[in-house]
Amino acid sequence: MIVKGRTHLYGDNIDTDRIIPGKYTKTLDMSDLANHVLEDLDPEFRTKVKQGDILVAGDNFGCGSSREQAPLALQAAGISAVVAQSFARIFFRNAINIGLPVIEAPDHTIADGDDIEIDFSEGNITNASRQEQYQGTQMPDVMINILAADGLVNFLKENGKYELS
Amino acid sequence: MGQTIIEKIISKHAGKPVIKNEIAIVSVDGVMASDTTAPLAIKAFREMGGKKVWDSDKAFLVIDHASPAPNERIANLHSMMRDFANEQGIKLYDVGEGICHQLMVENGHVKPGQLFLGADSHTCTYGALGAFATGVGSTDLAGTMLTGKTWLKVPATIKIIFEGRFPQGTSAKDLILHVVGMVGIEGATYKAVEFTGPALEDLSLSSRMTIANMTIEMGGKAGFVDTTGLELPYSFEDIKPDADAVYEKVITVDVSALQPTVAVPHSPDNVAPIQDVVGTPIHQAFIGSCTNGRLEDLHAAAEILKGKKIHEQVRFIIGPASQEVFNEALSDGTVEILSKAGVKFIPSGCGPCVGTHQGIPGKGENVISATNRNFQGRMGNRDSQIYLGSPATVALSALHGKITDPSTLHKEEILI
Image (cartoon, rainbow over all chains, first blue to last red; front, side):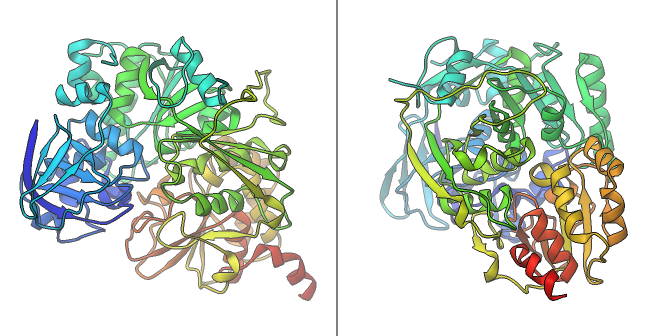
């Protein structure tokens, strides 16, 4: 799977309260989430983001709450993938479970507005704007398979049970 | 090779011996979801083709995060949860009965040695009674409601040994804030944290819950408090690590040197000794949440506020961790002391801590709060500042209208 897009860069320790504040999480309407995504971090984000864009961050992206509304809000706003130097555990798992591709790339030096291409099969990122390439961290097979099924709902619908490989 | 406690508990649930970094499919003893996470979990469960929860005695729903319902949209989500609980024959705790983590422990839904999943990051609280418990998202929870299992990577364990005794004016909250500051917001990511040592042996279950609760504020997958000295109303196996268990890291903390500690805006690991912020004006004070809403926390506040009035510029809100806690505080006179001092009680729930309702601060205001997170906007307003502290620090600061050091309390009283 290959995802290409233009990046929006943010820093370290972007917590889930800033991705989608708790007061907006109680909904099943994904457009409610999209309307408030990242508003406490960057009030302009909602108007800047375009369908297919890629979110890029530093360390510990998605720390804090277990709210799955965080990756859902990014996905509903049009974000097609998230690259970070590292992720908080629950966010990473939630993103894969809802079919939002995420990749940990500890050494990336991607800047805001770069055009990048992520090859999830090879686990690497090509930065067309800077002629650079970054290696991503390998995910366990169980996660690769869940992502390949476009999320845990489809995975369990098809398989009926968990499988490690 | 020997095993850590966490490796032992996971091995039992994997049906084979496992050690750190192995990936295993495990059986799950119980699951819980709140009104933030249950509606999405129910939706995902149905989309997976789920008809019947794997074991109706092992799934629990709690309406606590926006409770009582602040608006029509949320009221409808609550109805969806009640309908699902009725259809599935599972236990639902309704408005004001309590905060999910308090209810799971208080009602014996989670026990030592068990493996429990909650669709809430503070599920790690149950490590206080010797369970492996971790937070997951809604879809993961739906997967377990369907299959009774989940997959996980066995975490390496960081061991923290607490030596010495708690000095006057300090509590479990000061200790865990100190540790979060030391380890950092991502210092335990993907790891389990085992809390042990002589300083913990006399601690109540409530204090142990405060410690385990904030493991997630270091990124931890699970916290585990050594069960030595733990008293529960039933007998349980005291699981100990093997002598040759392998740890990621071992840290020793001298509790005797602990000072009242606060986390300053905007991160729970941004901690400072209270002296650094003494005198900061306070507009709102809050005691509650899964971190510090229990009877001993209300007692700590009542001890400070007995016969006094809080500062006229401060709004002091308390949300007990459960109705049971409130009832006990009512019976023993604590509620009367606090109410006469000017405290406003709200129904048990998460509202102010997570910024849904019942205590959103105004622009430019400072809040002193006995909760777990002070991220920007956490309490519902990005332009407010949240300081985290112990219940004693919150109560004394509310009394004086500014952040005040509870370790000086005794001296102050003599001066007055």
